[in-house]
Each structure stands twice: as C-alpha cells, then as structure tokens.
Image 1 (cartoon, helix red, strand yellow):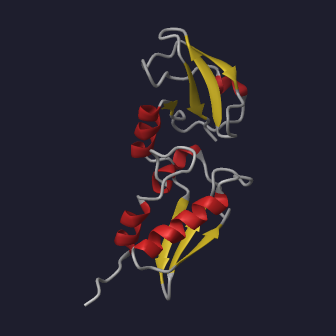
Image 2: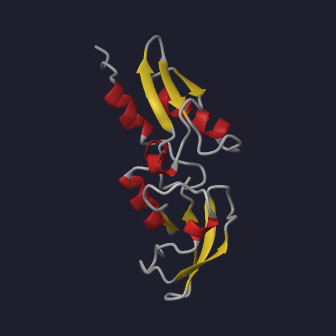
Length: 160
C-alpha cells in the first residue's frame, strides 16, 4: 500500500531544496515557499526575494525535481500577491546565514534608507564595530561590510 502524502511530508521534502546562491539555506527557511496544497498534483506557491531574481527558474525546477524524486508530480506558481520581506526568513535560516558567514538582516526593519545599513553585526566575531563598504553586494539582497574588530569583510543580507 502506498504511503499517504501529507502537507507535512511535502514540507519535509522541500527542506532538501536549497537556495542556489546560499546552499546552506532551504527555500523554506528563506521564506520563499508561501503555500503548499495537494490535489491532482502538488501545487507550490513561491514568492522570490526580488521580482527579477535570476534564479526563479532554477528554484522552480529544483522544487519539481525534488518532489518527483519522492514520487510526486508538482506544479510551481510564482506569485507576488504578498511581497517577500526579510522578515520571512526563519530563525533557523538566520542562524544558517550567520554560520555561512553572512550577517542576517536585522529583525523587523524594512530597507527604506541607507542609514539602517550603517552598522551590522559581524557574523564571525558578533561585534557591531562595522562599517558599510558598499550597499550593493554580489546580489540585490546583500551589502558588503568591514569589521573593525576582526578585520574581516563580510556580507549582510539586507532587510527588505
């Protein structure tokens, strides 16, 4: 007898789908998976971090391939009904960002002014004696900082 597929089981499988730019972070912990439903096939709603995210197709394909590996046909819909914000990142996700060497975004602060980006907590030494070097990191969602304590450069995931 085949195992009954539940929403909880789908979420468990989706933990395997990692962000293509930050492979220690699942799409669930990033907060871009916004809804899962089961009908004739599994339907996943996804809201990328940015409208023009170049990894959208890659993420969609990875979701479909992962569920196919578990015997489920899936359809992924990209939706912007509710915009993604950095508040969607789970606590587990923020810890993974820090362990990976990226400063997680500050809690409950929208990126509306460069002033809030002036200082960030260093993911290596946890000090805030840091300075913004460039608000434009390698992707739209990251900024580059320098820590005056441990003398290391690091990136922070911007609060948006």
